[in-house]
Length: 286
Image (cartoon, rainbow, N blue to C red):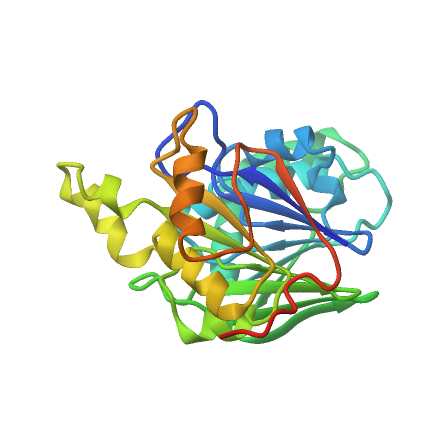
């Protein structure tokens, strides 16, 4: 079984009830944080985990709302890990990730120096290992496998989605994207698809062009549902809502997806959890 927890379901617009985009995946005793938007560590704590328990951090792309708390994750893991010779935080993302991580460590350079000077058991900066990919297998350990494939969020490029597999269960995390063949291939036959959900009808009604611009590189609720249907997945999990559904509106969003995708549809507030079992999503794509 793979457990999916929607840590943050919000958007770049600050929301008192939603953290920034982030998803927690638990599989085979391993814990993966997918993106690290605003407020992720508070949500991670509420989910019963912490930065020092992460197996790896997976980044779909380098938009600010998806990496806003990257520095907090790195520093907090460092100062809350008390074992000697701690395992470096594995960070997997698209090309450009290493540059961003280096810049983040530089930005926290003073803080890192203060802590090393103050704590005798902190003798070196945070240990991280960055791996950059656009396609193929990015992780394989103790029966858990993670694959990556390109997505289409242009002009943001490169962007990637991830597929986590364990003991017959599988979950795809699309990140921000419009429909594309590479995402279809990554998603084919998966147990669940975690996909962003943009209400183009509501966004287009806003009078500001900068806000309306987001429509041309995000999938609508219906497009996310269509991707799930084409791939034959068992569960569609919607997240990263724009605009955020008001209380009582989830049924309206679900109905938009259900008109296209006739299997299980999940959406909800931060910390919403979904279990994905082996054998889910075996319907042939078509």
